[in-house]
Image 1 (cartoon, rainbow, N blue to C red):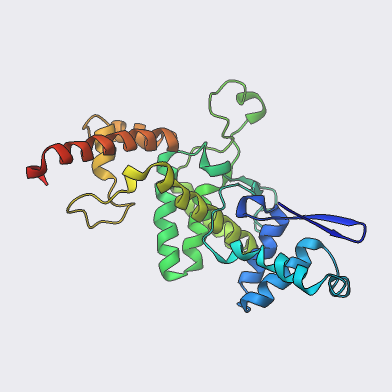
Image 2: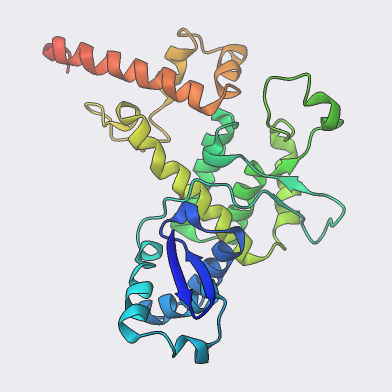
Length: 270
């Protein structure tokens, strides 16, 4: 955080994506949709973040104002947001229903949920079809489990969301289609940040394998089967898909390390 003092006013400015507040994130997403120049983008957000009027900004030394704008350059670089600022959403078509999202870094999510969201993330990134984004959000945001106030003390997982079921996805996506576009974009950025953080934590999972031209999301099948002890029956694969995301990635990382070690020691098998 960067501390700013204007007269008797003391304000903290974010210096990274994870230091943004929920309100600031929505302000960033709203500005992105306007397609303004970088200088205007940063200056407008600086005024919003400081919570001051333009006439008050004129009292700031130009060099200081320039430095403060430059401190927001991270917003124009890679999205590294892994903090779940959008905790829940309430679709306007079903205002009596609240849908709850994943935790920070998707730490309580399943591997299956992640892969289903990633397929839609990549498709939306390529097509910009809003219906695909609605589906991605519908994968991540689900109703709370019934009687969660009691069940939370009886289960190991702190995730309050109902288990993901494919047949409920379409209905939830239709309800989400009327959500504020800025909130949708905020969720998209969060998932983008989580995806970009994983290769640093599990480099061998994302390391290109000899002769593998598939995308990352499509290149996991063999490793998933190996985690299922080589079994391809529904029960064994479901066990992997419904396991915690990071537990699966730790298993995939070890399998990948073993694989590359084998390739290193047996070059004739490349």
